[in-house]
Amino acid sequence: MNNFLEKTDSYAEKGGRAAKQFQFSCIRAGNAAVLRKDMSTKIFRNNLEQLFCGDLTSANYSLNFVWAQAWNIAVESGVLEKAADQLYNEICFRAKHAVTVKQLVDLHIELLVRYAEAVSEVKRRCVYSPEIERCHKYVATHLFEEINVRIIADTLGVSTSYISHKFKEETGQTIVSFIQMSKIEAAKLMLENIELSVNDVMSRLGYISQSHFSQVFKKNTGLTPGKYRLAIKRQSQAQKKDICSYCPEHG
Image 1 (tube, rainbow, N blue to C red):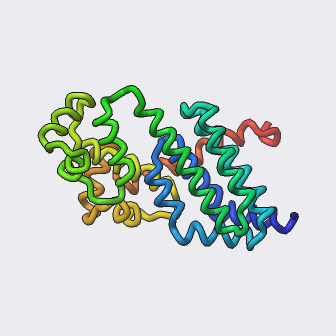
Image 2: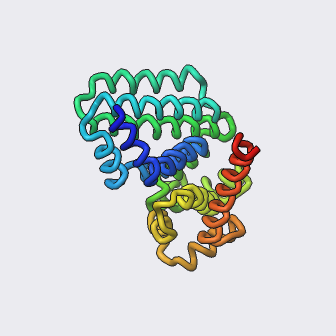
């Protein structure tokens, strides 16, 4: 067990802790698409599987701790405790029958993504008509693909003029601006993940021109992607400094 704890500490220091906080941020934001994309990468999966080295007991112990934290975040974000419990209990039951670490990692990804989806559903519920809810859901689940008004209209089986008018009427913004805003929100989340470069974020979201991406990002946030990341980093450092100032050794 001591050897495993040493490995988990090393994993945390090398980016594991930052990755977990990023994933929890995605759950709070209800951004399942970003979370699924991030956790499905070979790098993430391989790192997690190598951490446990085939040890099912250690994997179960470690992942259950994270699942409990994810449950708490989902509930704090508006998901009913009963619904959060159902998801948690389902994954835990299936985890008991897992025979490989890979299967546990699959369940880990599934649970966190489903919590993010549940939070997203809570945010949309009883606010818009079923058609506009479907628009929101389509954008959220296809964020890393080509999205435009025609594709959404074809998916819903309506005309582009009808859905454009209805979306603007209910939300006060155009579908195009909503798609753009959704991509920028995803970009903000990913920029807080130190393992991704600005170019990585840009390409994942389908932007070809870095200057165009920077222009759109700055229009929505007031900062370029690079300056936004720097501001987040400084904010995080300031918060850590404030916390340390209350530590006993600092008086």
